[in-house]
Image (cartoon, rainbow over all chains, first blue to last red; front, side, top):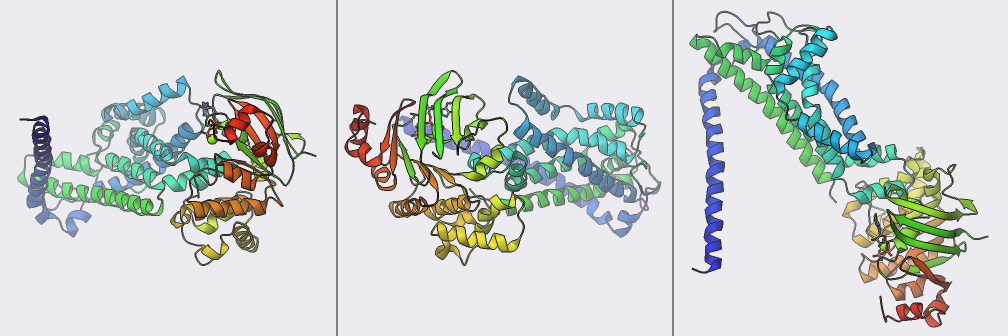
Length: 285
Length: 250
Ligand SMILES: Nc1ncnc2c1ncn2[C@@H]1O[C@H](COP(=O)(O)OP(=O)(O)OP(=O)(O)O)[C@@H](O)[C@H]1O
Ligand SMILES: [Mg+2]
């Protein structure tokens, strides 16, 4: 057997191995989603969306948790986007490229890998206790903002880095200041990447349970939160709560709530994909 | 008075000295060609005149660079103001990923000019100056990236003209273009010299001979010879210049 044949066999072997691995992942996901759909789809109706939690599984609904999730998303976005994008711009365009910057950079990447429950403890102490926010939406959103800030910062920097240097040079050569160059050239050109990072970060926040439980989000909320200082629940906590009940009815409710949660996540990801494609078509080098 | 003047300039990248005691004066409304082998410091020296080297962390300069008799490395000089007077065209066409129109008016917009009449007039005038108007006048709202390479380069020239500089620096502006586009850019340079002081870096000897009034030959960070283009190409004083322009090394 000569070398070329050997190489081809190896090549093919790896190809099929890769296909097998990919199919395994996809298969598991399909089984999971199929299972959830079979169990939960029938239970979803308008009442399920608009009802409050209840001791009776057939009457229980997700309204407070769903509204809580939307509140948390909105507040987290308002806090984390300006902070994260500004920090990313600063680090990439203004920060000096010295050792301190290197250390900072490594630490920000590391922060993205810190277990979320640690953020919960941090949030509990700083926002809940010291700043007196208690278990409010604001405390929850602030905590989640901390959690996703590293992701937004890193993806903003990556997006800015991807803009060709020649564009920056051209702008400077035209007499633009640094800020004008960032505002008129770099941000529009990297918008797709920045927005993708933001949405992926937000869809991570949407599924977080642990840090919110730590700061004191409630499992049973008999009211719809109406202001950032209200206490709240979110979908993942509601799901967790239902799953831990013994009755079969609650297990079904949990499956249905998972479908809603997945739906919200898919919509977010869909928007991210749409925006990215749109922008990439407009900006080509 | 001389338009551009460098006096005893040294440039370092870190510990590496890449420009060694260069002095040169350049007359207004003339075209000067910088020639010399790759890596001899032409681009570095050119970019001193609009301070584009300032962005390189390890860049250090000694000596004086003057425009209209003013030291442009003085602390009181604002680089943004300087660059409105000293435009630059790069080797690779680098239009902004925006419309043709927005590319041209960019320099005005960042100066805060909003008057639509002024902007419209500038677009037409600059594109006509850059001999591009006829080709693009019906698609000003199209993306500049859809233009051909040669058109893009003329757009970049038009964009530079729009802010009415007095000096235009060009770093191998035609080297990435096909022969026809290249000829068009040359023609353009020839016409612009009535109103602008132009410095052009080129590796193309014929091009240098065709477009420039004076030619400066650089070698290993030193200015070997600067004289009228005719003399440099027919009867240079320095042997190395002679060897280079006749293609014996380089
Ligand atoms: N950003 C930089 N950092 C460090 N050294 C640099 C940098 N830019 C250029 N140099 C060095 O400075 C010297 C002069 O470079 P420069 O680009 O000015 O040459 P050039 O004459 O324009 O060459 P070419 O004809 O290839 O464009 C070279 O030795 C180059 O390696
Ligand atoms: Mg060069």
